[in-house]
Length: 138
Image (spheres, rainbow, N blue to C red):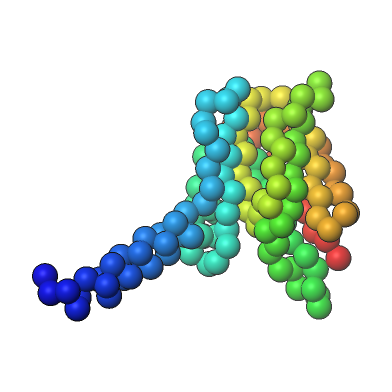
């Protein structure tokens, strides 16, 4: 291969590799107490992929901000999920706009904080059930 082609080829490989990483949602290490999650949904392609994968997760959370009568996805949410005994299941900064959660059956509370404002929702996980939680800020 000629030297004049090495740098452009290396740059192309790097850019395509980086684009692939951006399109992939973040995944938790599976197996931690039965907890698994995916976080992502930035851009149309990734949001479509997350929605398609949501059937494999009993809980889907979306985070949005109301702006001029429209909801706009946000990805700067601090998410904390606890079980009914107060045990912290997930405590993660910079989540969103779509968060998929796999946890054992039980009762849970999700607290989503953004710019100092905390939204709280309770949810139950049961076999065969799929919950969709929407968190919206003004």
